[in-house]
Length: 74
Image (tube, rainbow, N blue to C red; front, side):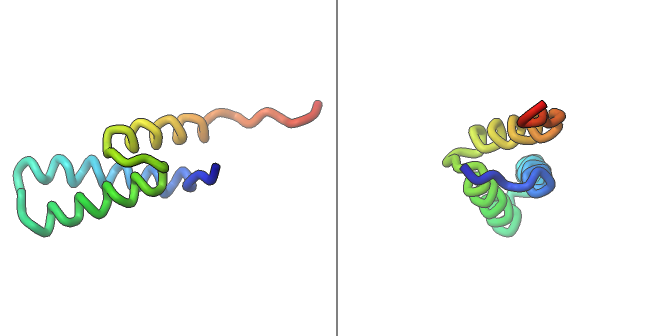
């Protein structure tokens, strides 16, 4: 399975969370559209269909990316 680069995932997670908070105070059509676009992009990048699932998968992938790699052979 292909995975998005961790820097892209980090950016998309931050964008979704920021826009979600902004929607609470500014429910304009522009903010809603930007939030929906960010949500769609994160879902595509994680192979999911819902924002909560996409955020979970992205965070798991980011955590995995932080783990030190083990060599294939000793």
